[in-house]
Image (tube, rainbow, N blue to C red; front, top):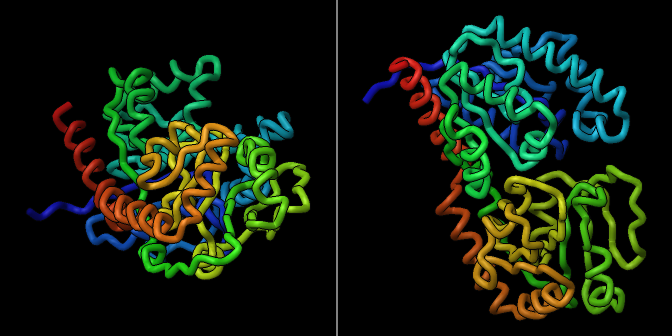
Length: 375
């Protein structure tokens, strides 16, 4: 069956500035996969960064500067927490830029990343696909936000696409009568599936995270008794986003790009530890670790338990004792490889590559567009 080409406007307040930038890397993969399809014409409103030549840039020079400055400041949510006045001013400029872009666009479907970016959508009845991440659910708790989003979604055919199944019932409860909800998992760069691991002695464990209190969670407190004696190593990778005192027994290496993780850190690590208490949808680094065959020890957040089957594709640790049990179990070489292979198989079968993700989005574009035509 031959389909006509679709004009898609994709908007995002996050995009990596270059190939080494860790911020919003999933957006670069998403854009690249969509741009290479011959059934789409893609325009992108996002911070400046490397994009395929076929992509049309929808942001003005002023909007690009504002978005780049916002990325450098850590994003809207971070700026609002740390510098509320600056945060409100930045958010206002972003909303105005989005509103201009939406008004001037002649696209068939709006592809909006993050709920807040949907707020300035015009009342033009044009269909919208809204990608939802875990952080978006905190936005819904703000006074008046849910009703504002309901008005926006009710004005057009809308499909809300969280990147994890656990968000579906939450979104259905809030918006199910004004929008369709369909989980669309992100994809994986195929290179992650080709990582060759070699378990080290003594064991090396890895934590890859932005350094904030919420993202680190109980990591230092719970892990201290098991790492301070030098019987195993904890390598910590990620940018310092808050003033965090890293214990001397932790080997902190600062931020690292995807290639360094894939070629250096993932191959030598027994697994990934994430004890985050931060609301998140489906952390991309966890997907990449599983694709590389790394077992994960994680706290029982919905974002983690939705992804990990305890004892089979990873280890869920609600407390320090469970962390100790996970370290012991996964430091058995045979068991580590069994769990790692099960994790890799799960990601291959359920998520696939970014090309698979792009195909999932295109199916949703066509479905929401057809819904609009039926009207």
